[in-house]
Image (cartoon, rainbow, N blue to C red; front, top):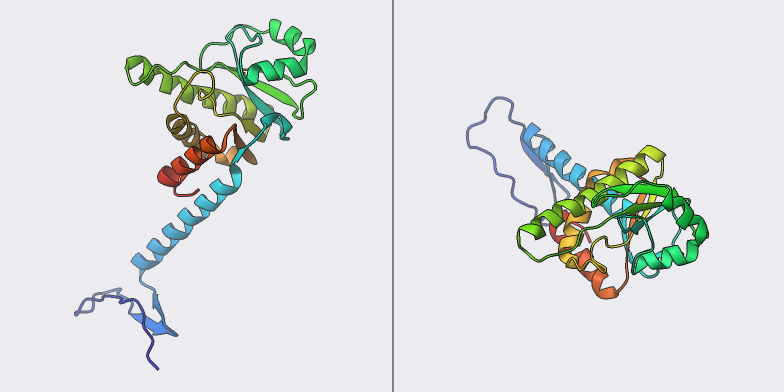
Length: 225
């Protein structure tokens, strides 16, 4: 019987420290330090990818029906009722949220504030003021930086408060009109950096098309879908 196996190349002249490869049952085993290091790197990268899939969840639907420790609310700088998801949150939370927000200082673009979450399925609301998209000009570049700051501010505040399960909308991609591909790339890059501090980070998209865009960005830039 003939076993086909990948070829393991070795130099014709044995070098000090070189460990030969052996074939057993169609598998090639190489015990050289270089091979072991490459295998460990591969396994480590594979483990990190699996963890990111488990900890960063992409889904589609009504974010207000999901459960977690905190929900991220796209905010007006004065922390008043805005448009889109902000309007839905304020309408459901009622006057308790309005009163609480009125006592907080103004929030700059890229900053974050935290409040309770009355009548919602989470413990807390983390409000962040997202930038407006202005295409690819110099203001567009500034907007991208500010969008990253939104995620960093939210995650930093959540970490301080011990909130480990967060629900994100597609920050900037709603009424502020960031293209989903850009919003996804910036958001996922920051979320990956904070993986170790949280149990699960959920991004809930409003449409299947938006979900497909985020999954495509994750496959392309982060090696998983």
